[in-house]
Amino acid sequence: MKFFKRVLSTIVGMIIFVALCFLILFLFIFVNAGSDDELVTVKKNTVLELDLSQPIDDYGGRFDYSKVPFYPNTPEYDGLFNIIDAINYAIDDKKIKGISIKNNSISAGMAQTKALRDALVAFKESGKFIVSYGDYYSQKDYYLNSVADTIYLNPVGGLDFKGLAMERMYYKDFQEKYGVKMEVIRHGKYKSAVEGYISQEMSEANREQISVFLQSIWDEMRKEISASRNISSAELNVLADELAGRTAKRALEAKLIDKIGYEDEYESGIQHALGKNTLVNRIDIYEYARYTGQRKATGFTNKKIAVIYAQGQIMYTEGDETIIGQGVMNEALKEAREDDEVKAIVLRIDSPGGSALASELIWREIELTKKVKPVIVSMGDLAASGGYYIACNADEIFAEPNTITGSIGVFGTIPNMHKLAEDLGINAEQVGTNKNSVEYSVFEPMTDEQRALIKEGIEDIYDLFTQRVADGRGMTQAAVDSIAQGRVWTGNDAVKIGLVDKIGGLDMALQAAATAADISEYEILELPVYEKDLQSIINQYTGGYIQTKEDILREELGDKNYLLLQKMKKLTQMEGPQLLLPYEIEIK
Image (cartoon, rainbow, N blue to C red; front, side):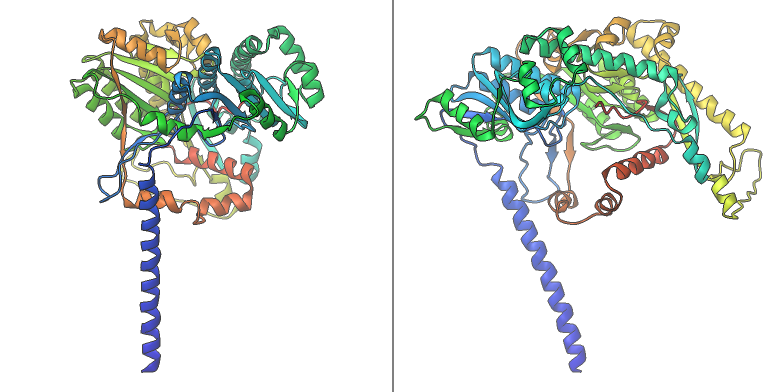
């Protein structure tokens, strides 16, 4: 009897302990969520500190927590355009004296970095100072920081300035060795997302397109750095070839930086700029973005422009803040279309593409929306393949100079383990009632008939894709095919060939939308609104404390091998034909 009492008391104790843990967790969540309502204060003689090391999305997101009682619906202010709005607000904020960019390791794409840099240029031109300090600058860091009035570099630091490069991996021999391969069907000689599975070396077509778009991005970077540093673009090329920034001393001699010094000397310089006896106050860019966001004027007009953000890979699913699904996207388009106060729509795209079916469903919703009110597209880092598919029928398309777009092509991949199964002594047999009743098996070689059927589907989608682009851009299908074939273009080159109308950021797209709607004053309505439940909130607050399966794999395999595993996993999970960028853009 005593034994059962002890067991019962242990169970009750465990239940109470778990209940207390959940109670503490909920209290922590609600206290932290409630604290977001507190107004941020900005004191005089404040320096805005720009730390952009955390990953940046175009859209911080609007979230609906109505399914969670008592949880406050506080807006997020950590998106790219929240940061840009804050920098623009700081121009006229007399309390903000300047911007400090310190040990910044920017975690943003090239087009995002340019948009931030443009905002910093406007801030600098207002007469306020921008200063920068780094122990070490990567190329992207230097591109952003080169706008500063004064650039400090640690005496034993360095500056990576060598030109742009990309690396691609090829697995054909690996597949043959281990007996697991990807069956590949594609249309487009430049559609090289799957090239690594069918070849052991880079094709000339792929080498050509990579070289062209890298050179285009590099030219744009040099042009802007040249304007800020007063060094000719040609001289910057020479400095890159000579690796002139590899030490602090060489970087100073090359005029890539202004001063060699330590962080405390950098801080002393800021103090000196504001006055020896002046108390220097500081505020983080995200706190300031919340401060400015809370002061946005609303209700001054009943005219709105909806900015709908499409960010992430396109998948046939509902979608969320990291994945573009036809469910969330089409709901946002429908909401904006049926809202009488919304006079025009700007679709902001940052996507490498994905599911052909989901892309077509979103395209259709845009087509319906365009008949009711103007739809303008603003391209971010990526608007490629399926990302271009959902852009091509807009009334007007804007892109940054270094946006990656195009990639009009289709591919399909199916894993095959026949050789591995054979080596292990495994044989798969199928029985069916009709000629095509037996589906493709990963344990058997793909037949000519199966390949032909998949190829037929790929060709049909490519034909539809090019026709969609031709109709949307006022071109012939043959003209689209000549610039398609899966080829990737930068924004600058896309304008020349007719895939994009103008170079410009979200601000120019908004101006175009206002003009098309014939309005001069408007509020911005950001969409989609993502619904959140209790489980998603718990995941948000416990993700950093509970080790997941992914955490364990990353720890055991290392970052590089883990990312390789994830890339292969993504390919095996893709269902149906894909309108996807040829590769992940990782420029070094």
